[in-house]
Amino acid sequence: MPYEFQCPRNGCSFELRCDADHEAARLARAHARVAHRSRIAPADLNRWLERIEAA
Image (tube, rainbow, N blue to C red; front, side, top):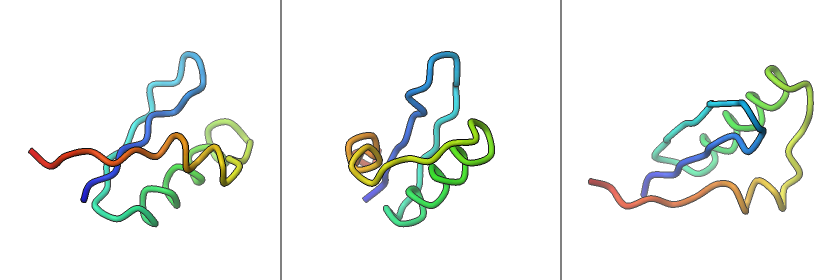
């Protein structure tokens, strides 16, 4: 099932979609590290990583 992540930071338009949750989580963490010089707490990542229905 596909997963989606949209960066919650104001003004940031980063979003991604992946088939695997571990890949989406890895890319979301990499985005936070590179773009915002921060980390995403595991609880926040679980809240922000969303399953979506395949079209």
